[in-house]
Structures are given as C-alpha cells and as structure tokens.
Amino acid sequence: MSKKGRVFSGARPTGRQHLGNYLGAIKNYVALQENYECVYCIVDVHALTTMETTQDLVQNTYDMTVDWLAAGIRPEESIVFVQSHVPQVMELHTYLSMVTPLGKLTDLPTFKEKVRDHPDNINYGLVGYPVLMTADIVLYKSDVVPVGVDQAPHLEFAREIVRSFNYRYGTKVLKEPQMKNTEIPKVLGIDGVQKMGKSLNNHIELAATPDETRQRVMQMVTDPQRAKRTDPGNPEICNVFSMHKIFSPAEEVQMIDTECRRAGIGCVDCKKRFAANLNANLEPFRAKRAEIASNENYVWDVLHEGGKRARAIAEETMSEVRAAIQLPK
Ligand code: TRP
Image 1: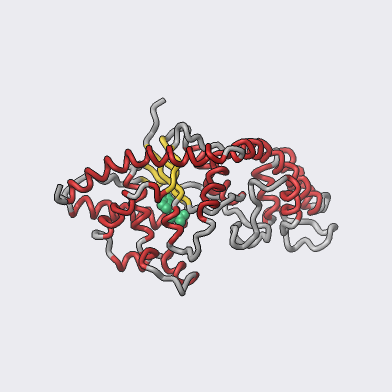
Image 2: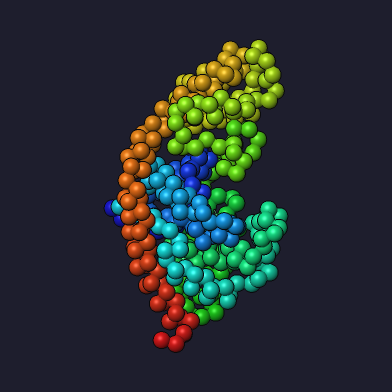
C-alpha cells in the first residue's frame, strides 16, 4: 500500500497513560498508521528541561511504550523509539539554533508558562525546547505533524526555522512540515473542572484494574447544579455524560440524555453504567497489555530496533545538512 507521507510525533515519557492521553493522542497515533508511515518518539531529552530528578525516567519510558503498543501502535510498521538514542538530533538542534532568533523563543506562550511553573529552573535547554522539537521533526524528513492547539505555535515556528535554515545556506535539504490539526477533545479529570492529568491526580489510567477504574469513575463530579437525586440534570455540562458519548452505545447515550433531564436516572446509576462500558471498552487493551508486559525484553527490543531505523534516516539527513552548511569534510 502506498502511504501519503511520513508522520512524526513526540511525547514526553510520562509513564502509564490515562484516558486523556488516549483520547488526545494515542488514538490518533494508532489511526494515522493506516495512511502514513509513522515515527513516534519518546522525547526524554525534552523531559529533562523541566525535570530535577531522573530516577523514574527508565520506568516511565517503559510504561508508556507498553501502553502505546497495547493500544495498537504497530512497531513492525511504525518507528517507535527514544529521542536520546539518536544523538544526531542534538547536533541538528545546535545547527538550527544559529538561525533561530532568541527573542522569538522567549516570546512563546509555552515558554512563559514554563517560566511561571518552574521559576527556579529556567535553564538554557528550556529556551531551546522548540528548536529541539524542530530538529526532531526535520531530522526524519517528516511531512506531517499532528498537533493540537497548544502545540500549533511550536509547529508554525518550526516551519520558520526550516525556511531560515534553507535560505541562509541556499539549500532545500530541510523539509517544511505540514501541520495536521487534530480535533482533540478536551478531556476533563474526575474533578470535572481541570484537564485530566497525572500531576493533578484527577486521571483514570488505562492500565488500572476494572475495580480501580470503577472506583475512580464513582468519584467523578457530575453536573454541579444537580444537588439531589430528584433534581433534573443537564447532560450538556456533565463530564460523565461527555464520556458516555465516547464509550457507551448510542441507544444508552440517548436514554441517559433523556432520563437525566427528567431525573429518571441518578448520577450514581449513570456512573455505574459508564464504568461498566469503559471497562468493557478497555478489556482488549488490558489483555494485550498483560501479554506485552510479561516480556520486558520485547518492549526494549522494540525501542532499540526503532532507534536503529531512526538513526539510519537521521545519519542520511545529517550528511546532507553538514554538506549544505559547508562544514569541512
Ligand atoms: N513539544 C511536545 C509536547 O510538549 C513534544 C514534542 C517533542 C513533539 N518533539 C515533538 C511533538 C515533535 C510533535 C513533534 O507535547
């Protein structure tokens, strides 16, 4: 089958993945494999920009990889690898930094956010985060990068860096990546207010047991206006309902919509139904996850093999880049 081009995406090694990661990224990664040659990178070097301790890095890399594979990323086709296993990316980052205006880096909203979140650790690497991201993308001659709204400015910036590089060195070696906007549903945590995330501990892990999953679901905050069982609810503002729409059969969603509005169904029942449907949806994932996790060597082999394939592409790009800059041979 001929593919439409190469997709690249990177994600920080955050360990076991949750529903927000699944709906926001992994599901899309899996689907893109149908039409694209996919390169999925675990960006451990990016993670270092905000990390003060590294003792969980190996485990988090492993756990995330297991979840990716269990969710349907196919390493026989797609390249799945660890960023630091391809040191050429650091070299390209340095060359790209020469055509990147510093003021633009420090103006980016993502940089300002990080300064706010980590005022004691504003390091040089953090400023260069988008340059390293650009190096990731162009090192593999990627055609397309799926991005949500938060990463869109980074991709726009990456395209500018590519144009500046090609212009400065009178070359076309670097490919300007296309942005593929992905409809990312905003997945709220069990608090029903903030985005689902590990740091807020408002998440539901994909690998949780059915019991743990049920317990987390039962803690979910529903329509806050609905104080008593006899109050009618408003599904439109209920986080549990938005999850039903993703994981429950259409007739059940319809029934809940109707019954919630006339207090025919209570929040407890509604959540029990959601937990059951979510658990049913996750069953094949859990079975596959258990199988993969029973063979730790397999998981590392996948990453090492991916690294080997990635390095082959990277070395080819880098010889073209070094020649374009006219570095001494
Ligand atoms: N910046 C991305 C994030 O914070 C991670 C990332 C690194 C990335 N390199 C990338 C995403 C290349 C897309 C393409 O989530």
